[in-house]
Image 1: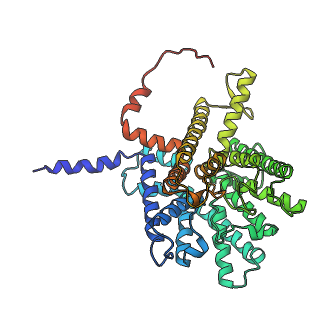
Image 2: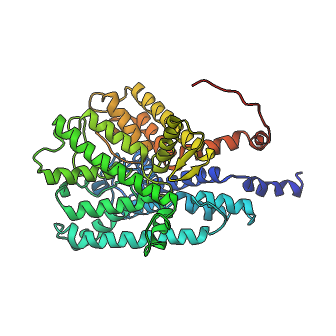
Image 3: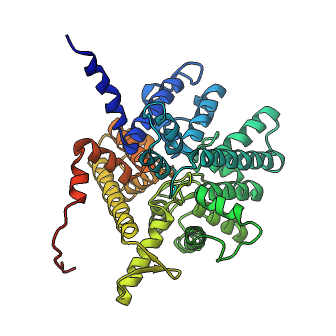
Length: 467
């Protein structure tokens, strides 16, 4: 008969669960809960089975926007509310919510526990998690409500039914701020491609959601004195990089699609072309809304490559978007510049960046790139396309980048894939939202518990490597 002491070991097992492991488990539980909810008759029509519900729930929790159903037709109003709730859960921070759920399992308030929770919210330092989460929730609520109000009053004025207009404004404001890309219409926002109010409101919501809590908090704190001395290096770097990417993406799309004449700007004036280029450039940064139909016939190969680059980079740390993040790109560019100049240190704006940050940036980029290539390789090996003939490798790679970077852009590949190909996209969305390093950390901790601490205490001799 087992002794009473054997039952005391179970809490210790839960206590040893790391933050990355707990985040992965929480994400899976939220997805499974959403799958069950969307598959209920009260939430969806008969067209939505378990697989369609599972794919949609994963896309919603990871704020991606890829879908195999028509949200407006296949989901009831209850199902759309459930979907919007999942967007909030995934966008406002699956990791932030995890810190509170972890409190019910992991007891104690030791310094290590507080440090781990701080890292989960992209916070340097100790404590302040509860205050930070309240700030994130309050900021999101205010911004989403303001966006919905403007869309209702000046944007979706063509919707005659008052109830439908209110819900369309709220749903699209939630989806835009959370960089999700889900829409109530099958053609996304193509009907409003010339509506400046809808375009600009959605653009601002996407940008505000993608900047990250740290940046918005810094801007609000120093709102009366915005200059390089008061703003942190992180804020200045995020703002500069984001602005540069939007500018380069807009001009790049305008040039590539005007020169190629592939049909992207059919029957558009130059003002409308500028607006559409700006919208798609911002949306490519992990939002996924489209004002122009995206297809291999409408977009040139150079345009697809440009969009893939923007998608892969993504939003900023702590934001509602995915990708490798703007600061990762900035760190890599700074490291490249230092190497070309023969410098031993990486310097950004007269500040030395630690080697640990540079190594993390390299790890994120290389790991993400390899993961996307493996996704594309597996999908290209799958010949089980539904309906139409197989797409080009560029189109499949575009879809894989879109899934991993949690964007939601689709050139018609997703619905044509069989269940195997769609499962690859599901895994890509989940890994992309959590982050490649967090997932690998969770797996490594599970397989090598205790080994990592021992390795950190061992010193090794140095030797040069020619590269």
